[in-house]
Length: 310
Image (cartoon, rainbow, N blue to C red; front, top):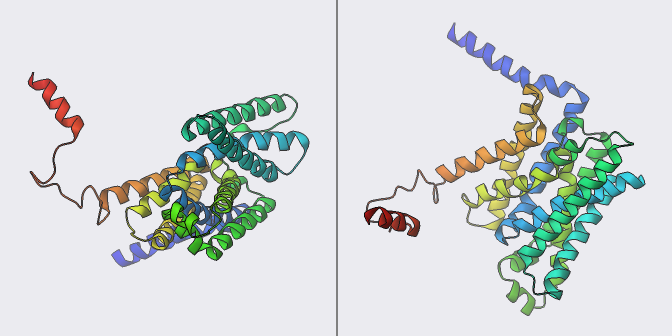
């Protein structure tokens, strides 16, 4: 009897997964979720290792201005977003090289300026056109169109093929920029290529998770993989699996519980990172017990104890 009940539960659970895929919009959403999960993971590994997360955040917020301008002019939104992403990265580099302003400050200035411009333009456009700002900010994976699937596939193919073709050069440049430059590698071209890859990835992911939350998909799966792997290609493989699981699981949660797709995907990615942080064999909080006397207390803890002892 127990075996029959278990078989029924397994069958009903499988039906719950298969039934939504009978709908055309769910099949399109699943394709985009798979591509976005893998693409963000691969590009995010370079961002994480090179400590360029803030650049990804700056570009992701800047594309909103390009979306608004493209919508107002009747252009393709993806093209407008991509151009705005490249323009923001170029402006950050120009401010950094032509003034004493540091890179992080330049990123903050460009990020906030482009994002404010995008919101202002979209607000003005809303007065005469119906446009949902939330879809651009937080994504709406369940509303992807065949054109969105095509654009995402093109962006994913371009970026992933480029990474595969220039993996050795990117690997050298990522871990030893000065050595790569001394050996004759075109590091400025690699800089531009990586920036373009980030912009393309953000444009491809915009419909799924939105410009506000895309940074989490670029960082959370690679960060979890960083705790589990010691080599870049292993890190990319694990991050791709985690990104894929996050996107697909978030998609089904969004469909089943009527949740916004972007936050649902990001929540799953955050949970997976939390599990890696706790259970990683080499770095896990729970798998690496702290023996008494083996590690000195943190400076903050020492200072707090000294305050109470006075």
